[in-house]
Length: 216
Length: 216
DNA sequence: TTTATATGACTGAGCGCTCGTTCAAGCGCG
DNA sequence: CGCGCTTGAACGAGCGCTCAGTCATATAAA
Image (cartoon, rainbow over all chains, first blue to last red; front, side, top):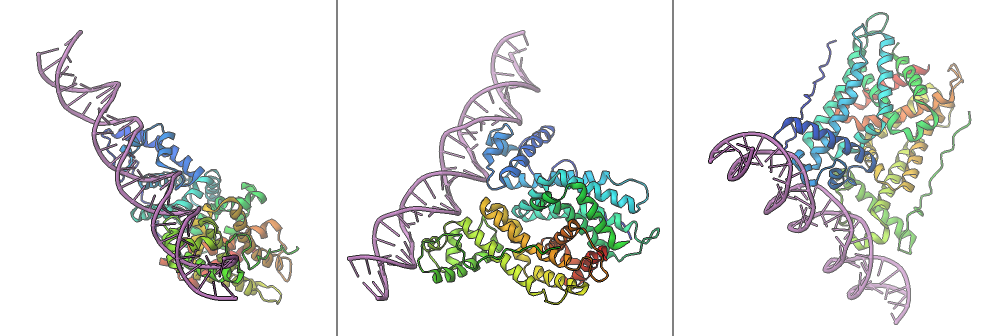
């Protein structure tokens, strides 16, 4: 089975317009802005965070904020994109160049679940906030989400039929990939219950057994 | 393992205050209001749905609306509660009185997944909207969510160690119950991708294999 | 070096508008 | 009349976003 391409996003955010001429300045300032905005969105949610709060937290005037970003919705998109980039990078780092085996897959899962633990607030934020994106941005964000899931699907399919693993249908591999994605995120969005009963290592152990149990 | 109690909610909504004296009238009118509100929330989301829209859709004046419900947030709570009641009832109906076996569990899962399919919009709404509840209501809603999950956990534990099924740790059963819950909901909140690749029966088949594969 | 001019990042008062909520007045029935 | 219920105009807090203006710095001319 051929690998699904994961479209890599350019580091520059050319898709969101700005009034400022100097591109380096745009990068730097947007960093500041996005960082403060993520914190505020996590703390107060999207709607209760005002553009004035964002400006203040990033040490700008509102006017200045709107030189770097053309609307609150565009800013939301930048936030989502940044979070996805961070998750994707972390998971890709867990992929070794060595052949994929059962143990390597477990490693990737572990790494991903650790990211979900570390970035729990961010994952929750994504779930809460995607709905407010205008359609054009929403499509991009779902594409990014799919890119991450595809990492798992590719990992799975690269060991399907190899060694002593059964050759599995693409549909099944696809769905299992999604399951891995979602079971990681579940640690974030059900933490109100899970954290009372498990620590992250318990969770990883049981879920890895759960996932691998079926297939092998 | 003893069954976890699923606290049954009273049908009357005594927790949300009203100005109207006649309780039957309150029940009837609130039904109307909640029904229209669910539709509007699904269509436009919580914030873009105005109280005026709600009033108009339920054939009330805004003033009247506020006689039956004390705030938009309270109304949101009633909506969430109603949705949970509907899901819970449907799943409980799938529980037969006969002893739980592998096939019975599969039936419960199937029934639940069908509910998730039918109520996809509602499930999505719950995910989008819980965050806007004031703390006191949020706790209640999460409790209701847990009640539904506990149905699965109880079903699982009632066949743990029986017949030729392995005796499993409570922690594992607990987590698998949550997995069933979430994998059902996943059909709703990832439908933007899943519906392109599966129909609900494919989905149920593969996911049931996935879930049962680990345990037995 | 000094002076004039141009550039563009930055400022914040304020505009236009929306929305949740209230309340004084009205209505119909016993 | 009194009571229960209904009405919708009015309120005012709060929001995203704009734009006329300031000021530090770069460049050009004298």
